[in-house]
Length: 214
Image: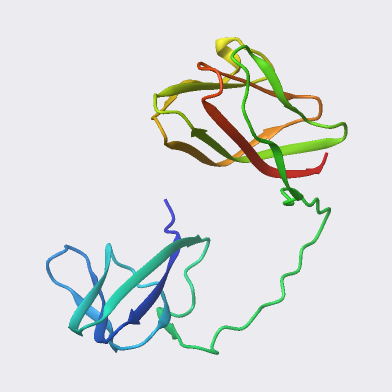
């Protein structure tokens, strides 16, 4: 099959002292060849060297912390430059032209607290209903146990059956809290978040996220 062009972006940050870093490549993990040496400051590097392994070698360090972040991108064709180092001021914005019909999706909307801080009852009830022509995006749940005994909380979407459960019988330790921070949970107009707790006046719940137009 045809080879794909790859580009690995490295961000190297050196703080709190001095250090020297090399970027090295290898095919077998034993013999390494340095393609960029003597990096001593915060820089970004774009590497498209045809190899199996790209390594960051800290060759010297004195009281410093070296942090390396990377991301790999696959292209249809190999980039023109095998390695390129960028320092402060080197990165420039590029114009992007989009042809054809464009739809904007995933806009953040308005930050919204959908419920709480409040305490659900001990029987299942509706905590929030998404308004007409809106989409609710749940991003966080915060459940606090305000008692000296472990207590449970249950939340569901649109009903109390097992198929609708979001969090079922989650035990929150005494005088502690549970936090759910998810990618996003999307609810359409008219859908509901329902919930209950296992012990009266034990769990305080807060639901937050974004509300946007449908």
